[in-house]
Structures are given as C-alpha cells and as structure tokens.
Length: 486
Image (cartoon, rainbow, N blue to C red):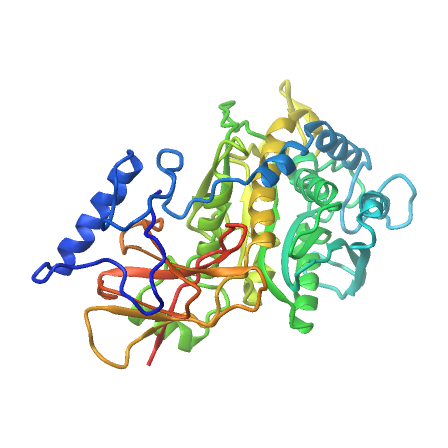
C-alpha cells in the first residue's frame, strides 16, 4: 500500500491547502489510499509509493521476507501428524492421570514432549534450553487433592534483545466426557495435541535460527482443570518482571470440518479481547474519555497477525473475532491477559463437539471421541505457518513502542504524538498510522523517520492514531495506541 516518504522530525503529515477543511482532507486521503491500491499515485508530489499488497490487505500489511518464506516451507504436515498421533497414543493425558507410568498418562506424555524438545535443541549451540516447570496445585474445584502440574518449556534466547519475550503454547492435558475421569481413554487429538504439535514444530524449525528477541515454546498442563499450568507460567514471568510482549495459545486447531460436515480449510479464528482484562479503574476512565475499546494491546496484536500472516506464504485467512475467547469459554491466554500481557487465542473455524470432551464410543453408527482420524494435518501445518509468520516477525522487528502519547496541553485541530526511542541497535525509525473511528484496520501510514515526535494535521477528535517501530530489515512492530499527555 502507498506510504509517504520520511519527513524531518516534527513536520506535519498530510499537507492542507489554506481553507481546506480537515474533514475533506481525511476523505481525500482515504480515496487516495484506495486509488493507490489500484496502482494510482497517492499523497503529495514527493510521496513514494509502497508496493501494493493483496486485495483487501490493511495499509500496515507486511509482505513476508525471503527468510520468512524459507522458514515457513520447513513446516512439515507429516511431522505434525506424527506428534498428534504419538500424543493420542498415551491413552489419556488427564491432569489427574498417572505421572509415573512409562506408557500411559500425563507423565509419559510429559517425558516424551521434553525429549522431543531436547532433541530439537541440540543443534542450537546452547541457545535453546528445555526445562520442566513444576509446582504442586492445592485442592480446587477440579483438583480433589494436591497434584503436581508440570509445563514443558523450551526457550530460544534472542541474539540482540534477549530481554524481550514472545510465547507460543498448546496444552498437553486431555479429558473425557466427565472432567474428573482420569482413567478412561481421552486421546485429545484436536484438543489439544494439535496445539502442542504447532508449538513443537515451531521449536523445531526455529531452533537453529537466531531471532533478535527470545522465543518460548510451551506445552502446558492443567488447562482442562482450570488453566493452572498457564497461570503458573504467566505468574513466573510476572514475578521475574519479564517483558512478555505477546503470547499466543493454540487450542483446538486440528480440524477444518464443522459439526455439519462443512469445511473451511483456509481460515483460522483469532480471539482478541477489546477492553483489557487487567484494566484498572483509572485506565477505564481514560478509555471512556478517549475511546479505544477496539485498541487494546491484544487487538493491536491481532492486527499484527493479519498484517504478517494473512497472505500467500501461509495460505490462510485470519478471522479476528472481537472477543476474549469463545462465548462464555476460556483458554490459556487468559492468565497472561490477567497479568497485563498482550495475548490471543487461535482456534479452528468451527468446532465439532462430537470430537472433543467426549468418551470414545459409537452411538447410532456415529463415532464420538477426540481421535486423530478427525484431524486435518495440512490444516494444522497452515495454522503453524500463521503462528510462525507472526512470531518470527515479532522476534526480528523492534519491540512495540513505549510511552506513546498525544499532547493535550492545548486545544488544537492538529495532533502531536510523542514516544520513547527504543533501545534496539537495529532500529531504523518509526511510522505513524491512523484510521477512521469506524474502521477495523489501520488505513494510513506515514514514515516519520528516526524521531520521537510527529505532528499530523488531523484532529484527534475524528480518527484513531498509533505508532509502530521499523527495523533496518524492514520488519515492523505491532502498533502502540497512544495515551493522553495532560
């Protein structure tokens, strides 16, 4: 999509002829942006046109680099299938099942996952490490007695900004119809061996690479009993003051077939909350006064996934759903949201409830149970590519800008944005983005160079603004939504 060329720090964005109303200016800019997508020139005479993306792509879309395309080609549906089938073969992976049986139960699954991740880590030269992250959960509504819960976590340390962290997970526990039944078969192929297979495959293909930031690949336990493993992991990050800038959980990403038999093999849902779960009363008051219900860090993260992963390199469309999770339901991203971390959930386009949370059985000729035969392994591989495109871009771009504010000390019909310069050595500069308040995606981008302030000749009353960082490689960060500077 078209983009204006860099301007000196502090100069204005759109140019306005004397007497031209700002409302007219924005409308004209919108027409110019649409026209540029059709090959026309937009903006003032000195503007440089960014190559147009796919039809309907946001103005902020980032085409995949050759390096990213090569990485995505390594994701292997056959390896994903092998992982799902192996996890299903443990019989049950219920959180309350055996932790020391060599072939059946959650303990056997835990040990196998750990061994796989250690195998992937060996070629990393020590940059990827694997740990068992354990604690004893005291009795709770679905935990009748003290129970050890163990996450399996692989960490690929960043080479430039290791303090900045991005997390991807799936949960390896499973369940039957009765959530307290720890002995019946509960193969859990779709829910959630599929999500674990995504995390493991990403660990495998990224282990020998050198991301700038740190990547964490996790298989967590205790999800079906109350999100316990994810809560423990998120708490450990919070206690250590870890800078987790994004977290994705992959939960029920194994099938493209709905309960009515219809198929949607090239769409993945991404659930992203609007009003932040961790919002304080003061933050809520500010949000009500300036808007921004659709501009939480998680919504910016979802837009980033669309920007980087909804393209021909993944073969997928990302359907962003404006909810924290499915209706009245929840997943492992919620403990991260509760602790103020941006997080979102990937889930298949339409669930088939006969093949999740069900005893394995046949009734009236219909097979029930979460079995591998109902999974679509090429689909899971495409979901893994969506995750990989977003994660790799996050880990190679600069971090999300901090301290982004709009100056409000004086009433004016222009908008001045300010932000802190990031510490990354590969930081090239910043872009200011904006959109109408009724638009779901960013529609305009202007390159403002290596600056920490920029004034746009548009009223903050009428549009939403944001700022994103640009690396020397061309990779862009998620957008940061500004707060008022009073």
